[in-house]
Amino acid sequence: HNITVMMFAPTYTILLFTATMLGCKVHLVRPLESGLLTPELIENSLNENPSIKALFFPNPNNPTGQYFTREELEKIARLAVERDLLIIVDEIYYNLVLDEQPFISLASISVNGKTMLDYTITLRSLSKDHGLAALRSGFAIGRKELVKKVLVDDFTFGTVSCMDDIAQYLTIAALTQTPPEYHEYQKKLLRYQRSIIIQAIEDLNELVKYEAFTAEPTRSGIFQLIDGTGLKGKKYQGKVLDSDLILSEELLSVGIAILPASCCGYDPSAMKLRITISTPESE
Image (cartoon, rainbow, N blue to C red; front, side, top):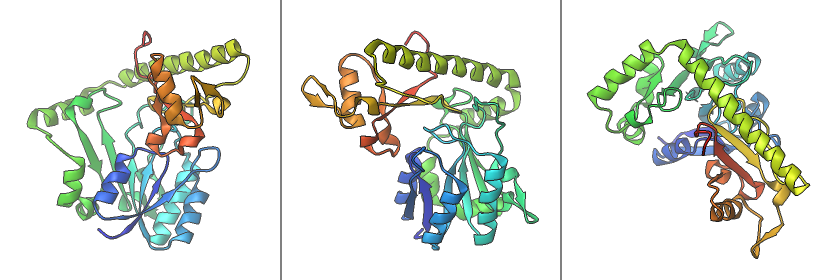
């Protein structure tokens, strides 16, 4: 309570809501123009606000798909050790990395003779990589004394509900009996469906003879960001397309449901949309 935490936008906004509900002061960090977060950006923000005591750190990030290299994680680890920071790491998508670059957990990093196990609490879930969202099963991994610092009644209330005995047994079964081939199949399917979206954007641009939409293939997770700045300022049915909200509303009016990325923390004027790549191909 009453501590300053660093959070990032765009990201999974429930983290922001939870921190606010607990009475934390939130220092919100925007990414570079490229949409990426960097260790240097984090360090600059820490210098600007020395009162920061904790970070909510997404790796991989929803919705950008960014995940961090070992070198980047070592830089962040040094900051944590030097400034005695608690880092709560959101690793919900760690099994759904789609690039060749391997995923590395921040908790596995050691710097200056210090292990990040002493500075991190790692959050994971069965909702995405096991497709078991209905279980409402998520869990925290960390040193017992560290977890006790944050596992107060308010935090538990804000993050856990109705985790019954059956769900707990099913969670254990999923974590201990899921073969590696399952996640490899998942990733193969996501790569294929990602390629469908990227190809559809290229085909659309070819059809209209200008770059209406652009998209860099997401590197992880189940979401693809689409940039609609090519439509910014244009008129459609009397409306000026100047925000992702208006753009998504007009797409919905013709039967295309895509989420405005401002719901994840983007500026609405950035004209970004978020589409799920885990949806069946027919949809």
